Length: 229
Ligand code: DC
Image: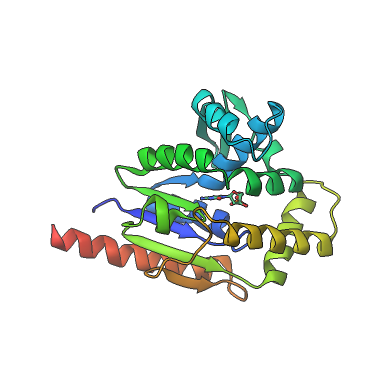
């Protein structure tokens, strides 16, 4: 079976992370969380005292740092220069900073290059905001996940509370909506629905229902590509 490139885009709380992880596991593909990469750059910038609009320093920072992923007992971890930063990149403060840092041209150029190198040989599920539009516009399968603001905020709220963070539901919904607005309105690689994507609104669907739908799409494409070879 040919190993494909699967692109999953969508706003925060749309279910991208959970579903791309599960889909990659089912297909025995590699999962690449590009949001975690931008979060890691944002963390390095904050630690280095680099402002989100200091594009030159951000560009230099990207050439100096290393980012890699590891899987431990089905748990995915992200490393900055060898340090496990998986937990510290997930605070609401880091989410907002990441949205700003990820709008920097120098950061996007560096991360897109890295993502293309990681996905080059196929057998990958990449999740993000611009995978099907910019990183791999020729990806064999593209999904665009969405859900209502309320549902996305609620999911993010439950995630943060489960980690012991003292956040309110109203504030979390407001932050999610604001971040998506910024991600959609930026000039460079904004969050957009690829014209050829399978669009899934997960508001009232279970994780299993969305996963089944995605698996059906990918398997159909895998066998089609197999026949054409
Ligand atoms: O998916 P996430 O919430 O972890 O992403 C964090 C931020 O990173 C998000 O607000 C926008 C940015 N991002 C991006 O610009 N491009 C991507 N491919 C992935 C994330």
